[in-house]
Image 1 (cartoon, rainbow, N blue to C red):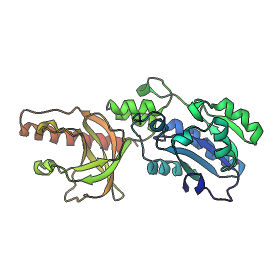
Image 2 (spheres, rainbow, N blue to C red):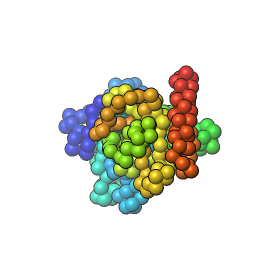
Image 3 (cartoon, rainbow, N blue to C red):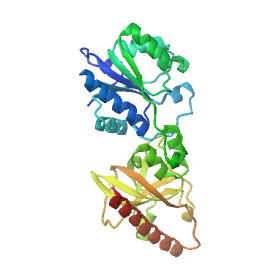
Image 4 (cartoon, one colour):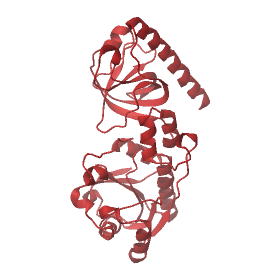
Length: 318
């Protein structure tokens, strides 16, 4: 899959293509429907498929300080899109100047002059251009002038976790913030992932017999609510069952929120300096302060046992 950053990276001889545009944070199941249809339509027409997305998130430029928590960094989104069969991803730097393009100028500058769109696939709520004035109706109207078609994909609705709402990144972020990682996974189609570099912490877990990887998460990452979770720690291409702690470590008077993962039954791991991923399967309990360290150790042993059981049950059901 080709990856371009900015319009100038698109090959000069790029021909017609099928395009879909959006932030696509998380590449959740609703996004997968749209992107999957773009890939399918491109194959029907015998041309490449292109996903256009933005960096930073448009809200950060339009309303500074309002950057939403991110469900997936751009490299992770590209991996997920490649798995769906996308031929190219174009990341457009979203600047103040770019935000002021009119909907018509956006169509000409991006879809017509550079990507030579033959078809555009979007969700029903797609908006674009200055002040988000463009919609799928306007996009369709200009398709007659610039020789492209528009197909609108209705999003399915979620099950119990989403209360019957359409798949959305906003809903997914809310569920994650509330610790409802199982509900978020229902929308994403996979466990929510947090990534970062393993850094040295206070190393209390090692002293207590449960050495953890302290993950310095990427900026703006959507971090689940404080608590203990079952999941996986992925490092060097290996996915290991893990008990995950999110919070300030109130037992020892901590103030900074951290994400720490204990690889269950693994001894002698040295992950310092490595980029790792933590996948959240299920919420186990809230973050507590115990009367004694011994009480904490009993709880931690119980947490690890419960996490192992949840992971084993998940693996059996797959």
